[in-house]
Amino acid sequence: MGLLRQFQNPTFRLIRFTCKDSRRLTLPLQHLSQRRNTRFSLSSSSTLKNSRELVLVRAVNTEAAATQASKMVKAIRVYELGGPEVLKWEDVEIGEPKEGEIRVRNKAIGLNFIDVYFRKGVYKATVIPFTPGMEAVGEVIAVGPGLTGQKVGDIVAYAGQPMGSYAEEQILPADRVVPVPPSVDPIIGASIMLKGMTTQYLVRRCFKVEPGHTVLVQAAAGGVGSLLCQWANALGATVIGTRILLPVFNEITSGKGVDVVYDSVGKDTFQGSLDCLKLRGYMVSFGQSSGGPDPVPLSALAAKSLFLTRPTLMQYTITRDELLETAGEVFTAVASGILRVRVNHKYPLSEAAQAHADLESRKTSGSVVLIP
Image (cartoon, rainbow, N blue to C red; front, side, top):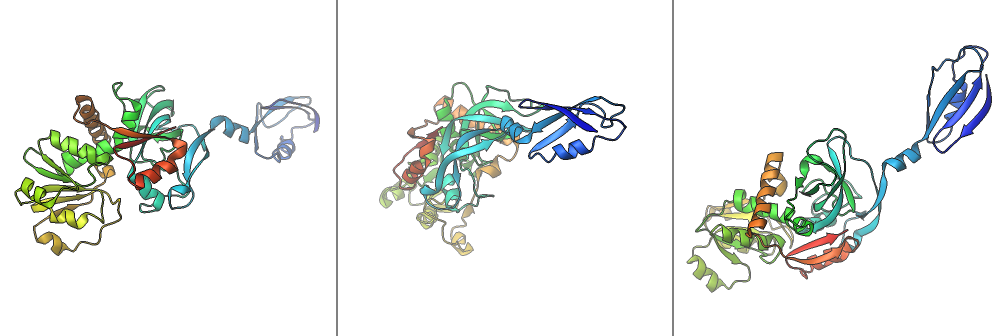
């Protein structure tokens, strides 16, 4: 068996062999397979019969193939837990969507306190390094094999899992995104998805606010807080924000306390929130921006037969139907004017560290959006 001639181009190699017997084409393949990151396939039988038979061996450089199937985009990465300075702006590789997935080019990304919790380690990321972010609106630019229901060009939004929205592009499970109505601007959509859906489950399902209820909202000027006040008011409740004087509070509640407290602050306000509740009142603790509250003995709840819950959005949007219903109510509330979204701060995605610093130091109000 003798190697006569080779022809090369960037994607394949032509090899012409002569053979005087029927030996299998073993030696050349073994020899060529020593080339790093290369695989081969034969265009004819692996057995050569007679002489002067031409065989085409196609060599595919796997590094080049990987490059063609993926691309580099900019994203924020976290390699260690800590302050805003651990947010690093760098290139990351993104591949093609697999079955049941889509690739989205983000137009706007919501900034939420849960991003701070993951950055600090209050909530544990499944892997490190990781890309933070739980909310975005973007355009579908690729769909996985056989996928129906989404197509290239659709504008979609998501909130919750999977984490990773602090990126120019990302791969998402198709069943975790929702269509964004044309009437909703991407910046508004990105600012409302996580906070709006959180508000929806808090006032519509966790504790169903009805006319005549009195509601206390801690951190009422914040992203979720401002939406809570608006939606509860639209439902006919009397809404009290924080920083109200005790005599005024007692006058509003006739000294009886409130039906429900929505508390996202945690340690600094938790005990005061419990004290404000009426008999059989509901304490809804859905965040801890000041740190986790101290342990609560059951006897503290027994004094007024109080109810205490620590809900999360993910547990209220487990099914596809729950997700679509929740997001649909949010978009309807925006369109009808029940929710008036205030996007008071916009930062380039590359400046996510500064946005985090401003959020934690309470220099922001309303919603904060990052722009890729």
